[in-house]
Image (tube, rainbow, N blue to C red; front, top):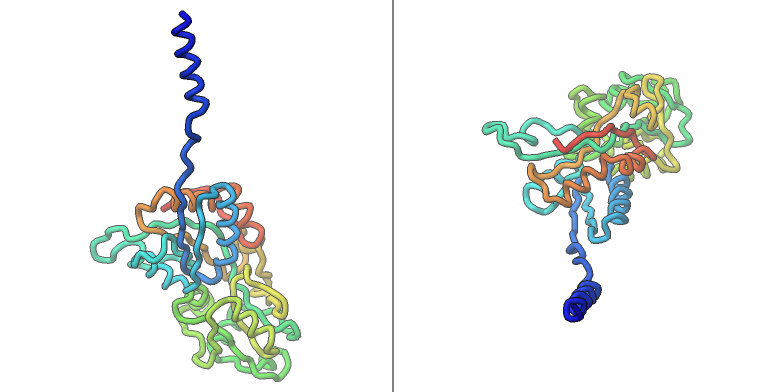
Length: 277
Protein backbone atom coordinates (compact mmCIF):
# COMPACT_ATOMS: atom_id res chain seq x y z
CA UNK A 1 0.00 0.00 0.00
CA UNK A 2 2.80 2.37 0.95
CA UNK A 3 4.59 1.48 -2.28
CA UNK A 4 1.45 2.25 -4.32
CA UNK A 5 0.97 5.61 -2.58
CA UNK A 6 4.59 6.48 -3.20
CA UNK A 7 4.35 5.67 -6.88
CA UNK A 8 1.14 7.73 -7.18
CA UNK A 9 2.84 10.68 -5.47
CA UNK A 10 5.81 10.46 -7.83
CA UNK A 11 3.47 10.32 -10.81
CA UNK A 12 1.62 13.44 -9.66
CA UNK A 13 4.90 15.28 -9.12
CA UNK A 14 6.04 14.28 -12.58
CA UNK A 15 2.83 15.63 -14.11
CA UNK A 16 3.07 18.86 -12.12
CA UNK A 17 6.67 19.40 -13.20
CA UNK A 18 6.06 18.46 -16.82
CA UNK A 19 6.84 20.73 -19.77
CA UNK A 20 4.33 23.54 -20.50
CA UNK A 21 2.07 23.14 -23.54
CA UNK A 22 3.90 23.78 -26.79
CA UNK A 23 3.40 27.29 -28.16
CA UNK A 24 2.29 27.71 -31.80
CA UNK A 25 5.12 28.27 -34.23
CA UNK A 26 5.48 31.85 -35.52
CA UNK A 27 3.51 32.59 -38.70
CA UNK A 28 4.01 35.45 -41.16
CA UNK A 29 1.04 36.32 -43.38
CA UNK A 30 1.93 38.37 -46.47
CA UNK A 31 -0.86 40.69 -47.66
CA UNK A 32 -0.42 42.40 -51.02
CA UNK A 33 -2.64 44.53 -53.23
CA UNK A 34 -5.03 47.48 -53.06
CA UNK A 35 -3.68 50.70 -51.57
CA UNK A 36 -7.25 51.67 -50.63
CA UNK A 37 -7.54 48.65 -48.32
CA UNK A 38 -4.26 49.09 -46.48
CA UNK A 39 -5.47 51.15 -43.51
CA UNK A 40 -8.49 48.94 -42.82
CA UNK A 41 -6.50 45.71 -43.15
CA UNK A 42 -3.74 46.96 -40.88
CA UNK A 43 -6.39 47.58 -38.21
CA UNK A 44 -7.85 44.10 -38.73
CA UNK A 45 -4.38 42.54 -38.66
CA UNK A 46 -3.47 44.31 -35.41
CA UNK A 47 -6.66 43.05 -33.76
CA UNK A 48 -6.03 39.51 -35.02
CA UNK A 49 -2.45 39.52 -33.74
CA UNK A 50 -3.68 40.56 -30.29
CA UNK A 51 -5.72 37.35 -30.20
CA UNK A 52 -3.04 35.27 -31.96
CA UNK A 53 0.37 36.65 -30.88
CA UNK A 54 2.26 34.09 -32.95
CA UNK A 55 0.92 35.66 -36.18
CA UNK A 56 2.66 38.65 -37.77
CA UNK A 57 1.70 40.49 -40.97
CA UNK A 58 3.64 41.98 -43.87
CA UNK A 59 1.98 44.47 -46.25
CA UNK A 60 2.82 45.39 -49.84
CA UNK A 61 0.93 48.17 -51.68
CA UNK A 62 0.88 47.37 -55.40
CA UNK A 63 -2.76 47.65 -56.54
CA UNK A 64 -5.46 45.00 -56.83
CA UNK A 65 -4.35 43.34 -60.06
CA UNK A 66 -0.72 43.10 -59.00
CA UNK A 67 -1.83 41.65 -55.64
CA UNK A 68 -3.50 38.77 -57.49
CA UNK A 69 -0.35 38.25 -59.54
CA UNK A 70 1.63 38.03 -56.29
CA UNK A 71 -0.69 35.25 -55.11
CA UNK A 72 -0.01 33.16 -58.22
CA UNK A 73 3.74 33.78 -58.02
CA UNK A 74 3.85 32.69 -54.37
CA UNK A 75 4.88 36.18 -53.25
CA UNK A 76 1.78 36.76 -51.10
CA UNK A 77 -0.66 34.71 -49.02
CA UNK A 78 -3.64 37.06 -49.33
CA UNK A 79 -4.42 39.57 -52.07
CA UNK A 80 -6.30 42.77 -51.18
CA UNK A 81 -8.66 43.39 -54.08
CA UNK A 82 -10.90 46.46 -54.13
CA UNK A 83 -13.21 45.32 -56.96
CA UNK A 84 -15.12 42.29 -58.13
CA UNK A 85 -13.04 39.50 -59.64
CA UNK A 86 -13.14 39.59 -63.43
CA UNK A 87 -13.72 36.58 -65.73
CA UNK A 88 -10.68 34.33 -65.78
CA UNK A 89 -9.48 35.31 -62.30
CA UNK A 90 -11.64 33.07 -60.08
CA UNK A 91 -11.91 30.22 -62.61
CA UNK A 92 -9.73 29.30 -65.56
CA UNK A 93 -11.63 30.43 -68.66
CA UNK A 94 -10.93 27.18 -70.54
CA UNK A 95 -10.78 24.38 -67.97
CA UNK A 96 -13.14 26.00 -65.39
CA UNK A 97 -10.67 24.89 -62.76
CA UNK A 98 -10.84 27.13 -59.70
CA UNK A 99 -7.85 29.46 -59.43
CA UNK A 100 -8.81 31.66 -56.45
CA UNK A 101 -11.05 31.75 -53.37
CA UNK A 102 -12.26 34.95 -51.74
CA UNK A 103 -14.45 36.55 -49.12
CA UNK A 104 -16.03 40.01 -49.07
CA UNK A 105 -15.02 41.86 -45.90
CA UNK A 106 -16.40 45.38 -46.46
CA UNK A 107 -18.34 47.69 -48.74
CA UNK A 108 -16.54 50.82 -49.85
CA UNK A 109 -17.71 54.02 -51.49
CA UNK A 110 -15.61 55.83 -54.09
CA UNK A 111 -15.95 59.50 -53.23
CA UNK A 112 -15.54 62.36 -55.69
CA UNK A 113 -13.39 65.02 -54.01
CA UNK A 114 -12.59 68.68 -54.66
CA UNK A 115 -10.28 71.15 -52.99
CA UNK A 116 -11.69 72.42 -49.68
CA UNK A 117 -11.71 75.99 -51.09
CA UNK A 118 -13.88 74.96 -54.03
CA UNK A 119 -17.54 75.80 -53.26
CA UNK A 120 -18.84 73.32 -55.86
CA UNK A 121 -19.86 70.24 -53.86
CA UNK A 122 -22.64 68.54 -55.81
CA UNK A 123 -22.52 66.55 -59.05
CA UNK A 124 -24.91 64.39 -60.97
CA UNK A 125 -23.45 61.09 -62.12
CA UNK A 126 -23.63 62.39 -65.70
CA UNK A 127 -21.61 65.48 -64.77
CA UNK A 128 -18.94 63.34 -63.11
CA UNK A 129 -18.73 61.25 -66.29
CA UNK A 130 -18.33 64.32 -68.49
CA UNK A 131 -15.76 65.92 -66.19
CA UNK A 132 -13.56 62.82 -66.01
CA UNK A 133 -14.11 62.06 -69.68
CA UNK A 134 -12.83 65.51 -70.66
CA UNK A 135 -16.13 66.86 -72.05
CA UNK A 136 -16.44 69.47 -69.27
CA UNK A 137 -13.14 71.27 -68.78
CA UNK A 138 -13.94 74.42 -66.76
CA UNK A 139 -15.72 74.89 -63.45
CA UNK A 140 -17.85 77.69 -64.93
CA UNK A 141 -19.61 75.08 -67.09
CA UNK A 142 -20.92 73.61 -63.82
CA UNK A 143 -21.86 76.96 -62.30
CA UNK A 144 -18.59 77.40 -60.43
CA UNK A 145 -15.67 79.76 -61.04
CA UNK A 146 -13.93 80.03 -64.38
CA UNK A 147 -10.84 78.08 -63.31
CA UNK A 148 -9.77 75.13 -65.44
CA UNK A 149 -10.66 71.68 -64.08
CA UNK A 150 -7.67 69.44 -63.35
CA UNK A 151 -8.74 65.78 -63.43
CA UNK A 152 -6.84 63.46 -61.09
CA UNK A 153 -7.09 59.71 -61.60
CA UNK A 154 -5.56 56.43 -60.43
CA UNK A 155 -3.17 54.29 -62.45
CA UNK A 156 -3.99 51.29 -64.65
CA UNK A 157 -4.27 48.15 -62.52
CA UNK A 158 -5.91 50.05 -59.67
CA UNK A 159 -9.13 48.46 -58.43
CA UNK A 160 -10.45 51.93 -57.62
CA UNK A 161 -9.93 53.07 -61.20
CA UNK A 162 -11.47 49.88 -62.62
CA UNK A 163 -14.65 50.33 -60.56
CA UNK A 164 -14.83 54.07 -61.27
CA UNK A 165 -14.58 53.48 -65.02
CA UNK A 166 -17.16 50.67 -64.87
CA UNK A 167 -19.80 52.46 -62.76
CA UNK A 168 -19.23 56.12 -63.56
CA UNK A 169 -17.63 56.13 -66.98
CA UNK A 170 -19.70 53.18 -68.25
CA UNK A 171 -16.70 51.69 -70.01
CA UNK A 172 -15.31 55.02 -71.26
CA UNK A 173 -11.73 55.77 -70.28
CA UNK A 174 -10.76 58.68 -68.08
CA UNK A 175 -9.37 61.57 -70.15
CA UNK A 176 -5.72 61.02 -71.18
CA UNK A 177 -4.92 64.52 -69.88
CA UNK A 178 -5.64 63.41 -66.29
CA UNK A 179 -2.93 63.62 -63.66
CA UNK A 180 -2.30 59.99 -62.66
CA UNK A 181 -1.52 59.11 -59.05
CA UNK A 182 -0.35 55.76 -57.55
CA UNK A 183 -2.62 55.69 -54.47
CA UNK A 184 -5.75 57.14 -52.93
CA UNK A 185 -3.57 59.10 -50.49
CA UNK A 186 -1.66 60.65 -53.40
CA UNK A 187 -4.93 61.66 -55.08
CA UNK A 188 -6.12 63.26 -51.84
CA UNK A 189 -2.87 65.17 -51.35
CA UNK A 190 -2.84 66.47 -54.92
CA UNK A 191 -6.43 67.71 -54.74
CA UNK A 192 -5.75 69.28 -51.34
CA UNK A 193 -2.97 71.42 -52.84
CA UNK A 194 -4.56 72.34 -56.20
CA UNK A 195 -7.74 74.41 -56.06
CA UNK A 196 -8.94 73.46 -59.55
CA UNK A 197 -8.47 69.72 -59.06
CA UNK A 198 -11.09 66.98 -58.83
CA UNK A 199 -10.35 63.34 -58.04
CA UNK A 200 -11.82 60.13 -56.67
CA UNK A 201 -10.78 57.84 -53.83
CA UNK A 202 -11.98 55.42 -51.18
CA UNK A 203 -14.09 56.97 -48.41
CA UNK A 204 -11.64 55.39 -45.99
CA UNK A 205 -8.86 57.62 -47.34
CA UNK A 206 -10.47 61.02 -46.84
CA UNK A 207 -8.42 63.65 -45.07
CA UNK A 208 -7.71 67.36 -44.55
CA UNK A 209 -7.57 69.72 -47.52
CA UNK A 210 -10.06 67.86 -49.70
CA UNK A 211 -13.85 67.86 -49.47
CA UNK A 212 -16.33 65.25 -50.65
CA UNK A 213 -18.99 66.10 -53.20
CA UNK A 214 -22.48 64.61 -53.23
CA UNK A 215 -23.32 62.47 -56.26
CA UNK A 216 -26.98 62.44 -57.32
CA UNK A 217 -27.77 64.20 -54.01
CA UNK A 218 -26.26 61.40 -51.90
CA UNK A 219 -23.30 61.99 -49.61
CA UNK A 220 -20.52 59.37 -49.68
CA UNK A 221 -20.36 58.05 -46.11
CA UNK A 222 -20.45 54.74 -44.27
CA UNK A 223 -24.23 54.62 -43.82
CA UNK A 224 -25.11 55.38 -47.46
CA UNK A 225 -22.50 52.90 -48.67
CA UNK A 226 -23.80 50.13 -46.40
CA UNK A 227 -27.41 50.81 -47.40
CA UNK A 228 -26.47 50.90 -51.08
CA UNK A 229 -27.96 54.36 -51.68
CA UNK A 230 -24.63 55.93 -52.70
CA UNK A 231 -24.22 55.18 -56.43
CA UNK A 232 -20.48 54.44 -56.57
CA UNK A 233 -19.73 51.48 -54.31
CA UNK A 234 -17.58 48.37 -54.53
CA UNK A 235 -16.58 45.36 -52.42
CA UNK A 236 -13.33 44.86 -50.56
CA UNK A 237 -12.15 41.28 -51.09
CA UNK A 238 -9.61 39.09 -49.34
CA UNK A 239 -8.37 36.65 -51.98
CA UNK A 240 -6.32 33.47 -51.58
CA UNK A 241 -5.52 30.28 -53.45
CA UNK A 242 -8.42 27.78 -53.48
CA UNK A 243 -7.12 25.81 -50.48
CA UNK A 244 -5.61 28.38 -48.10
CA UNK A 245 -3.61 27.36 -45.07
CA UNK A 246 -5.39 27.20 -41.73
CA UNK A 247 -4.02 30.53 -40.49
CA UNK A 248 -4.99 32.31 -43.70
CA UNK A 249 -8.51 30.91 -43.51
CA UNK A 250 -8.71 31.81 -39.80
CA UNK A 251 -7.78 35.45 -40.51
CA UNK A 252 -10.30 35.68 -43.34
CA UNK A 253 -13.03 34.33 -41.04
CA UNK A 254 -12.03 36.84 -38.36
CA UNK A 255 -12.50 39.72 -40.82
CA UNK A 256 -16.13 38.57 -41.27
CA UNK A 257 -16.74 37.93 -37.56
CA UNK A 258 -18.61 40.28 -35.22
CA UNK A 259 -15.28 41.54 -33.85
CA UNK A 260 -13.84 42.07 -37.31
CA UNK A 261 -16.96 43.80 -38.62
CA UNK A 262 -16.98 46.17 -35.64
CA UNK A 263 -13.60 47.39 -36.90
CA UNK A 264 -14.82 47.55 -40.51
CA UNK A 265 -17.86 49.65 -39.59
CA UNK A 266 -15.74 52.38 -38.04
CA UNK A 267 -14.90 53.60 -41.56
CA UNK A 268 -16.66 51.42 -44.15
CA UNK A 269 -19.89 49.62 -44.84
CA UNK A 270 -20.04 46.23 -43.18
CA UNK A 271 -21.15 42.85 -44.48
CA UNK A 272 -23.21 40.12 -42.88
CA UNK A 273 -21.82 36.73 -41.88
CA UNK A 274 -20.64 34.40 -44.56
CA UNK A 275 -17.95 31.96 -45.54
CA UNK A 276 -14.97 31.83 -47.85
CA UNK A 277 -16.08 31.40 -51.46
